Image (cartoon, rainbow, N blue to C red; front, side, top):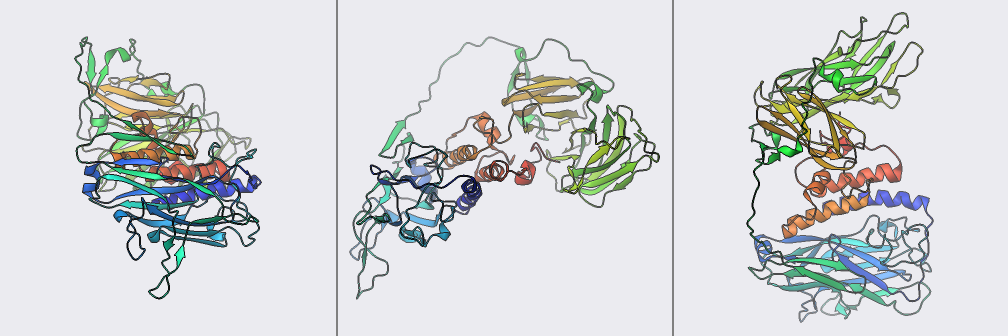
Length: 618
């Protein structure tokens, strides 16, 4: 539940900012009934296999939404499983199912007076072990709660987009190991129950009750319950659910495995083979020959220059490889220098790298001040007379050296590149003789950990672009010059301009594809996501819907053992780069959305995820 609370806290940032820019509204609709909707990952029902509950307790994150609200000031809510399994003393057994980590959502669905914070309500108590909620909206009990509503919305009901976006409360429902097969329904208890404050001498009764300000009597309410179906052993049906505010509709789909005979036309293929270092994705997948272009790609004596399109002033950080514990040297090249009189230049590198050092290259015949005592590294220089100096294409600006950690895993990639500056007051800036800051492009370099010094390795096995038009430099390290062939599985998604053992890959549109480097009969594969990093639904923006899809994948995989997302979507959803999709991917997506779209600041995928393949990684 800690993760659930973390996600809720992130969403609070989003909605807190929304509240500041949109006027809260009172929602009154005489024909509406207060409705509580119990959901897990957007569904009102879930099916658990006998095997799943035999292995241990199953914990389900539950959100309680209010999908219809005619106006409410106070809520006393008692929940139970089925009939509650009431004992003689009035206690409820709930068939061994328990509720833990109950808390109000943050932000929760009510707005203006409490500003999205349930703790600011007059009373907000969630006793999860008793499945009880006691809540009173404001100090002014003549006011009903209103909504975090979209601009122009005039009614609070399940048809509007935010109805199940911001919950009222959240908890975890624990299905105990070995629970008997059957149907278990989490719902509101309508009957009176013995209050936990009761003693042998004084028995107190309570009842679910909702109250609207200025209205006598109780407020009518409806519920959409949450159903848990525990299958008998041997049942293999998968259950999916469609949700309405009036009822729970469960559709059951049985997946059949059909074996068919197919006739295969023989084609020439290039086999992807397994390598010890993990490069080439270690798959046995074949690449159809027809995906390769017919023409032979040219190589060149100066591969970087051949790869650069146009005449953009560019710094290119080299790609190098090394074994754990070794020291590597990385050059930083200059191309298309328009004439430079001085610079204050900062270089970011992965904090795991050790013994950073920086020395001047041969690009400019001037003394530079190189400081390696901090991260970012700093280089400061200026011509004595203020005139321009022009570096030759391919000249080395500086050399960087780092020691790879002794415990670095083979296959790890560390990134090094241009930093925005030392801090917000001292930015990276390269100037000409007129004092004008020059537009400078930069291509990150990589340090790839290999098992042997001469091992052939691709510097990225996956890469996600921050946006269409962005590029990345791929390099097949330790491959002989001019003997590597490069291909893209979908040039509409990512184009490839190659020269020798290097290639520049550019995102042409949103989507997924693969880039192949073929060398000595081995195909090395880089999984490419073109467009927005973390944009799971590929709608061109990062928002809470992407995080919701990630959570649905996590719940579907962990609870039912099946994938919710496609393979391509999972590649985008794995923003942490750990090879799995879970709550640790949803958190940075929500945080990124909060910072960028709500607060209006710049967010860093690398800082949020630590993923060395993030588009803004150093």
